[in-house]
Length: 282
Image (tube, rainbow, N blue to C red; front, top):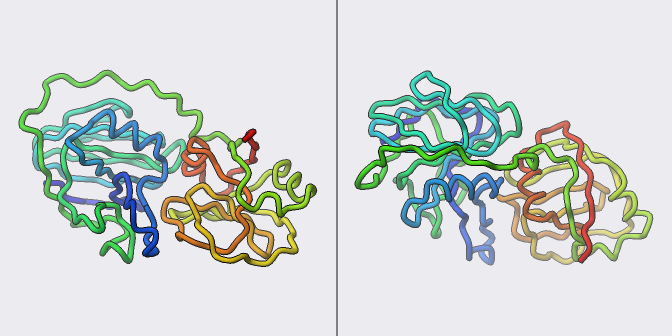
């Protein structure tokens, strides 16, 4: 049993995502930073379950009734096991009746906590990923408890720390390819979009809003498919980047598409950060 003693700032449960329901208007959801997510899952694979805690800015404090192995990846944060700081990107074993706490992030904004166990949380439309109104809650709450399915035997030896280049976490240059509506922009608009720096004004799991204005004479188009990583240009000239919980369709101009590494990197950037787009040959 895992009991939430403190929920942190915004902690959700995510798995690989809710595929196959976009035609019903349901986003895929899943992790914001898939690189950190995949690292945690591959470090502690357990059956076919990819359930994980995604912790934003300040992590949770959890009471672990039974011994559990765990790993923390993603944004740099303090990890306290029974009050003792332990390393990220390394598998640890928490003994029975332990307290595990993730503190405030120091680099990036989203950390990932993976247990070697199956979390007993509802499967909705084939996924455990939190997303309201599909799931009852959008984040964990103090007092929540989760049953766990444990491995038959806990290994007696921990893994060595994982080596990972984490420069993507604060990379300000994001690789992109032209989006479906790139050709609608004038040469001057394209140049401005690529040469100017953009400041993150607001962000959440649905998307990122960037500063600046790129004037366009084109109003909204017929609704079309929206994918995570798509850079959209509104009629008012604002830039929006679709993220994991983005709406499935929209009528804004789709001018650029982030690659997977850029999407993971952007998900670790906070408000006030400056970014630039670097277009890649197609």
